[in-house]
Amino acid sequence: MVELPGLSERSEFSPVVIRTNFTDEAAWQETTAELERSSLDDGGPAQSYDVVDAPELDGTDTDAVLAAISAHEELWEQLSVVFVADGTTMRAGHHALRAVTTLTREDFDDDEDSEGVFRSFAER
Image (cartoon, one colour):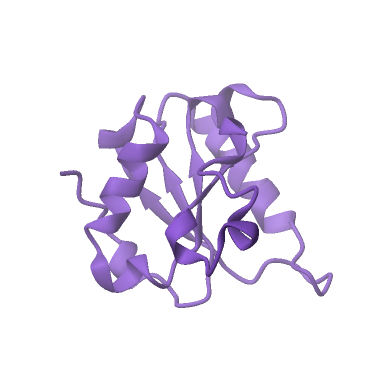
């Protein structure tokens, strides 16, 4: 199982970005610069986000990322979504992050509430 160092030190309300690709440092710097320019719902600049470096997850799928997060049981229930900076993020001109939910259909009261739930934005 892959350990995610730094995940347990995250700020409780900060978004988590898991970096799985380390092939292009300039692209990563552009990605983090864009994150810093981004706005929250209230229109203010993003206060913080936590980055977890996970080179062991390079080239893996969404299930592998979720398995690595699930090893941190105390955080699994706190996180409903994580963002992944993978090879696609680094290659794309806009450096979009993959949004991955930790929720499953079982987390909802009925099938109607869970309608449309999927693991990753890119998998829809």
